[in-house]
Image (tube, rainbow, N blue to C red; front, side, top):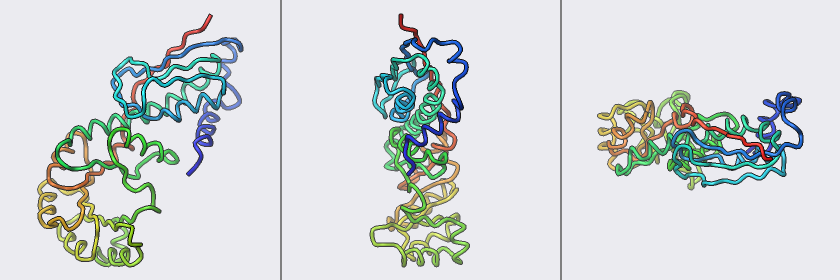
Length: 277
């Protein structure tokens, strides 16, 4: 994985370029300030490490205090962080730091809402690989901070046979058979199906997990009955906060939702700066 500092330096370079011309023109070099970071709405905190590190990279003498831990539910207008030190450094890092924090808090907050929606069903909420390039580690961490679980991190750490793999292999059973023949005993084999008549061939071929893609609740209940506990069943496709409980209540073991990372709304955050005398 790419080092966090490399990612943050690239993000800062994108924003700062050769220099923050507004801050350099308006703010005295010696000016000291204290900044208070708050959310203008309730949130679940995530992304503390990248947020703090942005300011440390700009000026190692900046002091950043975190008032909450990642995963904490925070009310609107409650302090998240305090940053103290060079006013120029704080202002130059403000947007980059807030952009990252608002995104990761948005993912954690959306995840927490969905996790709470399916409470008591026995079903677990998972993310997908539909993440921002290069920021997957932190977006998946935000899902965990929200109480959700992570699906495979990448193409290298889990076998998930998708519809195009099935087409290339000549069918569900053959695709599972090939994967099973190559997979080490420690690795589960998951296959995606989009029709009920594909379920029995997938199970007979030895699939450990079957992803039920865009199944209606009625079809999901049928699949659960047909499966009889032989494999884990994962529901996926178009899951929203409004529909997730109905999906989870069908008896599936897992429900995955790409919207947790690709469509979560950024949290409204504010950095309020006060110049020190």
